[in-house]
Amino acid sequence: MSGTEHRFQVDLRGVVDLLSHHLYASPRVFVRELLQNGTDAITARRAADPDAPAGRVVIESLPGGALRVTDNGIGLTEAEVHTFLASVGRTSKRDDLGFARQDYLGQFGIGLLSCFMVADAIEVVSRSTKGGEAVSWTGYGDGRYTVGAAEAAEVGTTVTLRPRAGAEHWLTPATVRELARSYAQLLDIEVTVGGERITEPRAPWEISYDDPEVRRSALLDYGAKLLGSRPMEVIDLSVPEAGLRGVGFVLASPAQVGQGGHRVYLKRMLLSEDASKLVPEWAFFVRCVVDTSMLRPTASREALYEDDLLSAVRAGLGEQIRTWLLDLSVNDPERLAAFLRVHHLGVKALAVRDDEMLKLVDAWLPFETSRGTMPLRVFRRGLSMIRYVETVDEFRSLAAIASAAGTPVVNAGYAYDTEILERLSRVDSEARVRRLDPGELAARLDPLPPAQEELVAPFLETARAVLRELDCVPLIRQFDPVSMPALYVMSQKARTQDTVRRSIEAVDELWSDVLSAFNDVTVEHRPELVFNWRHPLIRKITSYPPGPALRHAVEALYGQALLAGHHPLRAVDQAALNRSFLALLDRAFTDVPSSDSTEKS
Image (cartoon, rainbow, N blue to C red):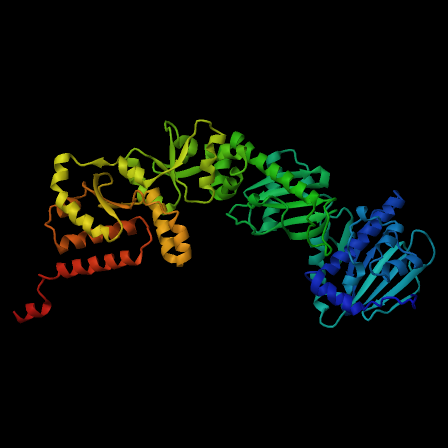
């Protein structure tokens, strides 16, 4: 079945609304598009005529708030004006006319359409290198355009924007100068704004210096201008297969994963000041400034397109940052130590998956241990087994006792510490690592002599009765520090049984039956409250006769041990702690005369 052929109608105002609200983050990109078109035209002229004059783009403010941008590029004929300026999406024609997409900035740019976000009318006057008369094109926001002859003495193109109501501030000289400098500073052509040149002949990392330290200082100064504070270090970066060169700045203050982005130029035109995914996630302490000729931009040309080449760039830059760290460990340990004090988290994240970085962490990164703060390589000297605890609270409660018992431990309560310890055998085949079982630690504490055990038997009987209600058993041992009267110890087996028991209590009958199958109670493992015989208070209360006061003392020591070890308090624990506290207060003030009785006497 045949029918009448019709053509789609394009609502230009709708297209502009789409650009401003869904494609571009801000109308500010109109300056980039104008610079981009001028630069592409200059590139095309150079390709056609190597002896062409040096490229230049001139930006001027006109009376009435208008803006004029002139380039000495290849120019357009009347036919090309219709194709370039009156068509939406006809990129194949653009290629046919010589603007091959891989060679020019405007691979996905919408070009002059973006200028309608700030202007109601766009005037273009162009004279082509191919000869013929100059041509004038004027486009309007409602979709109309006119084409006619014009006068232009020189080859090139001039674009004039007249601001829309409410958008005048985008075309002010100060705003245009700032935007042009931001976008075009690294372009290798002359760009002037109001007579002032804003482009530099070479990028900061391309400038040669006789002294490497002078170059490093100059680049750090450049980084300070971009970042707002002076970086700690600068790393040269290069990925030839992506046509990428630049530098990475190591931040002088801690940073978080996903915080901040990178400054990326595409063929020396600024693409993004906040690009993400340029380096591996672990390298969040680095901010890059790079120029690339091969990476693909997204449709808005404000971010990088995720593809295999970007993945390769990310891996390559990560390898260069890693090599820099390893080089510091060999050639400049003091600078490495300063870096680790600030960015240890990123280094540990890399050590979890990289053996070379694991060696660096083992040798240089300080860990908190019961022997003091020191690298793992120093800590494990003379140890057949490296023991660690998984939480900071557990380390605080056990470190002193473990050290006194001859069982030094590492605090693995911070990010990546456990994974690093478990991987130590990859860099030292003799390293044996195991999590410390608090029950094992209690077994290493010195017992009382047999005769002394008999004397404290009545106290232990009372303590056993009190603690039975709290699912705990009492022990008396001798240990340091003397200042600790009691220690609450939950072995790994006791912890497992407690977790299963709490889960059974929290679920319905069906799941309770299922979980009960996993609850092996052949041997009951309970937490232990270990009383320290070396503490004067413990010696005093063990000789106290059984009764309510002794029961309350045991409850108070139990609660204090839980709090000192940062253990969670159950409802029954809180009740025991409150009961003992109030009872002991009441007993302390029972025989104290009140102020009223004193006054009457």
